[in-house]
Amino acid sequence: MPAWVESPFQLLSAAEYAHAAGRRIRVAMRLTGPQMETTAAELLRRGAPFAEIVPYVGIPWGTLARDRDWAIGDGFSGQFRAVTTALPPQHVTLLDDGANTLALADALLGRTPFHRPRRSEGAVNRLLGDVARHRLHSLADREALEIFTVFPLGDQRTAALERRGIRVTRHSFAWTRQATDPLDLPGGRVLLGSALPTDGHLDPDAYLRWVAARAREGEVVYLPHRRETPQMLAAVAELPGVRMLKTGLPVELVLAGIREPIELISLQTSAATTLELLLNGTGSVIRQSTVG
Image (tube, rainbow, N blue to C red):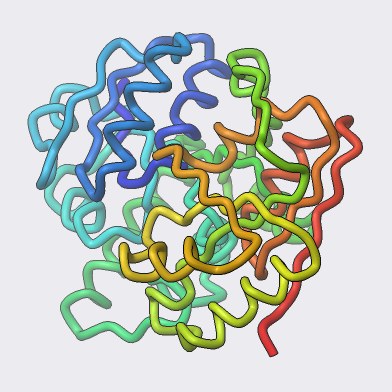
């Protein structure tokens, strides 16, 4: 069975799926940044149930054609839409893609257009989205479509998906927990970096003021977001009270090793849901705040 993933978190989701399914899977890994390679290497080191991990730049046509039972990391991907149009799958498991998991569930239910929230698309992409949704609905009609997620979709949404023939399987990071490495942080306050300034959703100067204010409350260990720019990281590292910790790994894989209580500080992020599960039982506190 091939898994096609495009982010480090999707890679981790593939490991969780393989563990839950009790099978070794082949992974086609799209090279979207340096953290993909470091995460893949770390997952293999920890014994992830992968038969292989093969890097790709484009679409892994050969891998997907040989086995039509797919695990897909990004259901909204333009490349995935193109593949489902030209190469209809026989079974699809949709892996987690952060907060987009909930948006994808709503798109499958016809509540929203088939694309990422807050994004406008041209006519061709909208058409491909409609085709992809039709393909996935055809699989649901044969009970061959599954969502494998750590996120709570809500009772109403889950019931609607299951009525549509879409199986919802929840997990709680069982593999990550058992494969973790103990982690000793250089401090008990952790601040999660954000990609909001990089993505244009937050003024960079306002973000730096927010980080500085949190550091004035007490020294923080800063875990960068993988999409933060080198310029932003350099500016953050110069702030008093900030200790930069670059791991090249998803925060879930890093903080699963926590054994002592920490205070985790972040802006609004889907990682708060995942980390709440992983930090359960450690006595840690998660504090989300806003800029302003």
